[in-house]
Length: 91
Image (cartoon, rainbow, N blue to C red; front, top):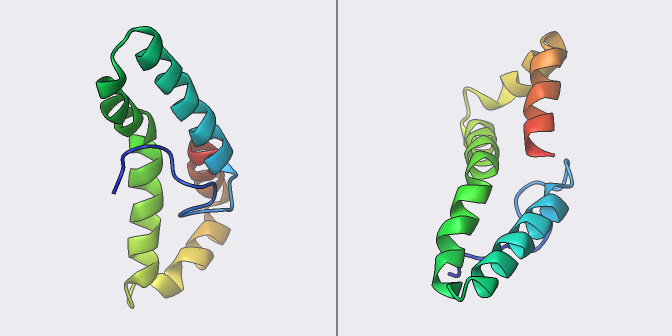
């Protein structure tokens, strides 16, 4: 599997982060090509997408865990500022 930007919404279509990740990936690609170092792109992409991957994959893991899944929405409802902060980290 390649390291470049995936299709928009590949894990989470809620925040529109696919667009911001695609733009960030394009900017890194341009920098790497201009520096004549295209081999650096994959590492740059992984750094740029690390926070997104950690937050989204963490939420998806919690969602797939039978004991945690039923508590996600009620917790977000009780702590809307925390939920908004996490979504804004992805956007």
